[in-house]
Length: 55
Image (cartoon, rainbow, N blue to C red):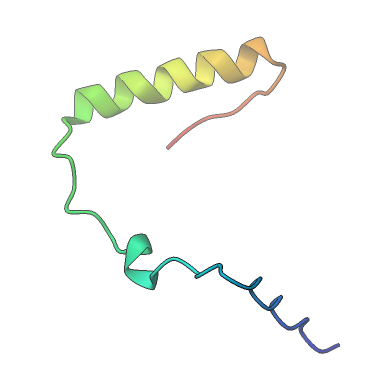
């Protein structure tokens, strides 16, 4: 099957520039901070019935 063409922008609307999606420079977070955040996310997901492991 053929891909669907992108919708044409409405009059007066400009698409945002692609560099809006450029990679960031990194926040410099520590491994411990990332592990703590992952654990909090896992706990929150479990509360909603989602058994997940972030790696």
